[in-house]
Image (cartoon, rainbow, N blue to C red; front, side, top):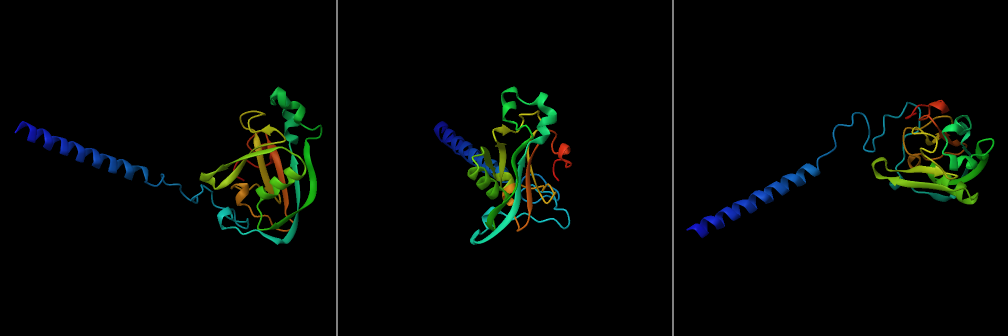
Length: 200
């Protein structure tokens, strides 16, 4: 009798554990808390008249159609914040702050700002490091010319603008158009020193 009770208790315990695990699994698959007006990649609404993001997985690059854009890379803001720059990095800052002067570069139909940056850096032997950030569905540029985020204070890093606008989404999601002016600029103050606070 005692053995039978013990067996029944064991079965109940196993059943309880199975139900608990199932409940845990359901909790893990729940959607994150409400993100308001943001899209699935945490993007705030795009200002009226500005290009909407194009997802990399939905893009087709046509190498038979070639366009041009004006492209540049600058870290001029560091010149006014040299005292905050990591000492071992100061020699990397050009005297005029220009890493790649504004120049007309070619790109293929469908390429993103990130695609063009990669090619410009490779063709001109400019160091560039990035990582893929799934939550934003885009590459994040950590460093250019060996100047990284946080090298000039906790609010420093790289930002890009197209035709004077700092998009509120990643550079892999911005599809370049013929005639665009693309600038990569280093900020020491979350974009405020570039005339644009974080998020455009």
